[in-house]
Image (cartoon, rainbow, N blue to C red):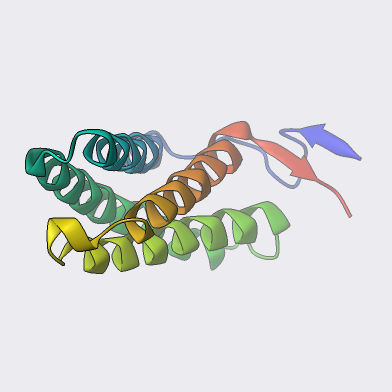
Length: 141
């Protein structure tokens, strides 16, 4: 059964947490778009854009992940599946973004096709984390 802001989850996420959560998905998506542009044009500047966008997603995603980790141990949210899934999705997006940063540290010609796969996966996981974080939907079970 699905309840919207039921008794187990009386309120949405904190506004500052929402601001932090709003950045990783667009930044990781921009990384993917820059990687796709680099694959199409082989202009090195697209590789540089991808590196900076990915670094921004990692920076802000680390703060959002830290906030989600703290929420795991708060009394109001302890034991909720939604909170755990949200943290796991955000952590997985961050780890794949870190691996993507290591791939992007190589020469621009050597990053394909790994960069596109890692950018796609990190953007998708950041989207899932944002969806869970902003949805406020609690599954009871």
